[in-house]
Length: 279
Image 1 (cartoon, rainbow, N blue to C red):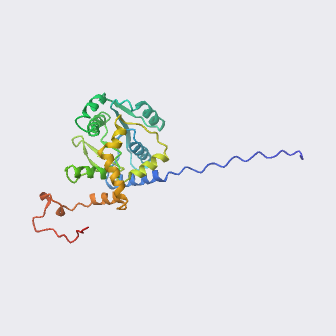
Image 2: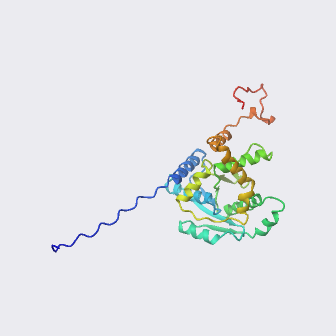
Image 3: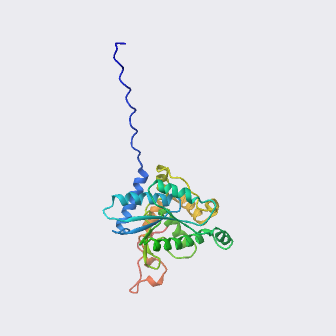
């Protein structure tokens, strides 16, 4: 009213920066694994197996962030194997990766019919896994990658151990680092210390899209052995706190004298059972 214009309204305050505590935890655990087990070295070319699942996409996000901050130089080569299932949308996955600045290679093999036929003879997951692994090895040779990174996590190691025990396959699980492709490459699992629940939360923080990998996914979630054992771990965790972490500690503390493999028994006397506890 006095002829002086009102000042323009103040701009709205900037939103606080988004925080990703679960993703930060995944990054810390992966970085610890990379350093402690010498998973990555200067000059490595790392083929990252991308399936479209949240585990492998979180792995790719984490490795990309660590690559940018690491004191050593290594390259990431994301590759997905498309087996030809109708449910899998490779073009959509490639578009997502392109938006992140990743040059995803799609390796297509028309194996869906063969996998479907194998359903009557064996569970399809193991057959698909062998097909994918062979294609990843071939891609690593073609792209001159000396390391292959997969997105298996703590729950995967626990479930694989139980499956091996229950099927009489020995006391074994997925190794965090091992030789691959006849010893010519290293296979690494940087997320082996990370619980599945943390990866799931990190995926939500990143708003990751969902990609169906195959036509059997829903069925195997209901009836598959791995899914059954995952549910069993959830039930047991209610009784035994931090069960998965305890299983990982046990897998890191082999005591051959208290097992039945005679190849590892002492020849200079008997082991003591002082440290064994009952029920």
